[in-house]
Length: 77
Image 1 (cartoon, rainbow, N blue to C red):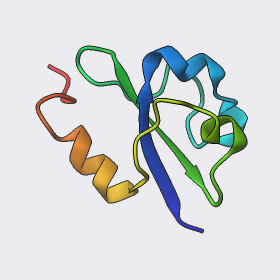
Image 2 (image 1 turned 180 degrees about the horizontal axis):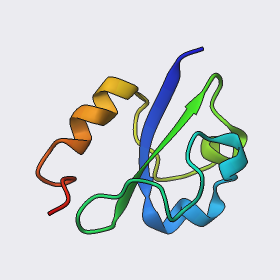
Image 3 (image 1 turned 180 degrees about the vertical axis):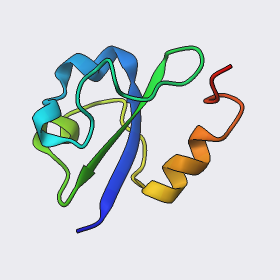
Image 4 (image 1 turned 90 degrees about the vertical axis):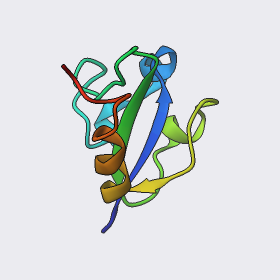
């Protein structure tokens, strides 16, 4: 089963059922430096709580998400 990732607005994290994801909670979701976007990942089909989000990005692979985390906008100091 492959892992799929998206970015989503931090303001929508409260709408996600984290039991459906590979992220434990809103607090542990990786966020960009200005805390406006977070990365969410899951295995298999897109969870219903993610499908209904309005700010979700296009789907990406785990490697694409790791590459994103390595950019200046996502690196922590």
